[in-house]
Image (tube, rainbow, N blue to C red; front, side):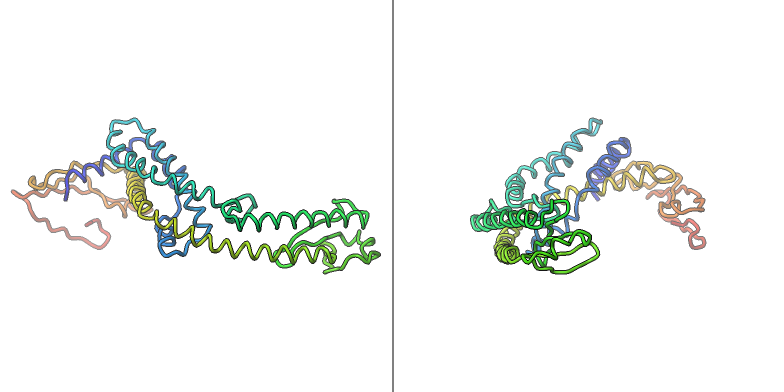
Amino acid sequence: MDLEEINKRQTLIEIFTEDLVFKQALRDDIFRKIPDLDGLVKKFLKRRARLSDVVLLGRFLEIVPVLKSALEGYSGVHVNLLRMEFIEPIEEICGHFENLQQLIATTLDFSTPGEIVIAPSFDEELQDLATRRAAVDKKIEKQYIAAQDDLEMDSKSLKLEKEQKTGYYFKVSRQKDAPLRKSKHFRVLETRKDGVRFTNDALLGLNKTRRELHEAYEARQVDIEAKLVETIASYMPILEDIKEYITVLDIVLGLAHVAHTAPIQYQRPTVLASDRAVMHVEAARHPMLEAQDGINFIPNNFHLDRTSQTFQLITGPNMGGKS
């Protein structure tokens, strides 16, 4: 065992038991937002990541500088240790993520609510398909205005709606469908409780064109997504590095939380060099037993040293406190 490393770990835990606001801010405001980094790394290394995983990675990369800033807010007596163990390594790693963050920001498009796609501006072919699709959308809007004029309805009465399978269609309530029944320019798709859905030849043709453009966009997007995942996978060794620091910090925060929230707060032990050959503990308690309801654990003292007492035999019933 390395005495210096043990004392270093104990000091790190002490930082967060002495500054509870600092500990709680890190746990609640930052660590709860960090995704499953192990799972994320595995997906990219196995080339199974999707655009949703790229989004998760991008959000994590935004959290890292916030974590560094939060750690820099500590001004206690152990600030140098915290800087050496976490702040400086995280700061160095952050520098390697700048290109990756820029890649993710320029590749993804979040303009459509609830949908993540490759940004058209990222690829000439995608841009062309997106431009053509936008032109079709304008023609669909013109058909909607023409239908309002034909049926002498306003936008409150006549709706233009969209479904994944059928595409765009017109809808009017059953109470106001009299003009539709008199017109020969439209075709009823179905009558439902919420209204009558209908279309015309022009809208059907535009839906077909739009669907073909959408399928071509999706196919091109799949190719770019695969190349994007391949590129991001090359950054996984760096992500593994920062994952190690975050994992250690998470463990330290967890130990500090347990030490502080125990029924009787834990005390930091004085760890001696191995040549001292002494173990002396006063009022030792079992951490699992004392956490149970209805348990009144009796603390125990014990002393072992190489010169006078090297062995003790403890007897008693199960769950009686021998541990």
